[in-house]
Image (cartoon, rainbow, N blue to C red; front, side, top):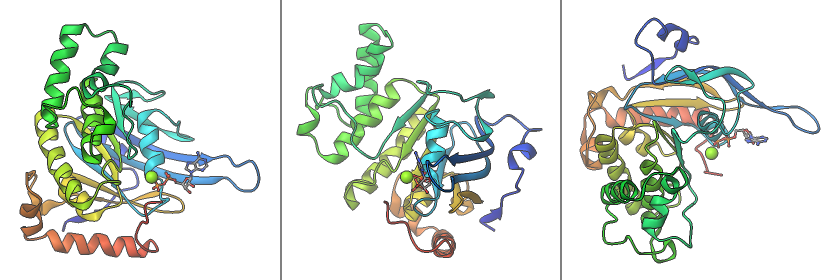
Length: 281
Ligand code: ADP
Ligand code: MG
């Protein structure tokens, strides 16, 4: 069966085996409201992400996906539980965890080259190395030839490729993305999804990505964490077994595989149980 129930103590159960790259251990997040009741955004979330894995956080709007990703980034602290990267507790933002947001976040006054080099310059990477690393990642996201262009001269997809190149150039241990393709049109979106597969293969990055798009989750995910809402819980940990541990460069290839539509329907049913599809609020 493609979908299995998550044991509540998954992280504990894992502890005897090879250590996970990232582990989320009994994490809850409560937001203190000035008046009235607190908001429990995440309750007792536990799962792990292995080295080089693409892990997708999927679930309806408001189920706590962004909150969980922000805790992995160290931008928010959990109320209870712990998040560990390579065994070390995450307690603050760090450049070993690079984040790409849905909104275009490039600096308008810097060229593509300047944007990709920015973080390295701040971190004191010598000029020659900066140049070489920037070239590597600009090539990887197919922006060679656009080094001197400014963000205002680029399409939405190209701007997101700048953001991905800029993040990867800092050589993070974890690539974190919050609905990075959410603002793109459908065609650009699947090109970007395919590009992400080749990036994951080439750059060997452990990736955690938030999406509310089921097709995107199944195409990209080596593992899908399906979250339920109010409060946000890990409802299922889904391994798309029909992909047999492989990644595919083209989206059609995955859509054509036996087992794809069964999994899509199962996840759609989970979404429906949660009171409708996400409206990407
Ligand atoms: P998702 O990304 O899955 O749509 P979020 O993580 O943005 O969900 O939000 C989860 C819940 O936590 C929502 O009910 C949201 O209103 C609440 N929330 C998120 N951030 C804050 C905050 N800074 N203060 C108060 N409540 C918040
Ligand atoms: Mg969100």
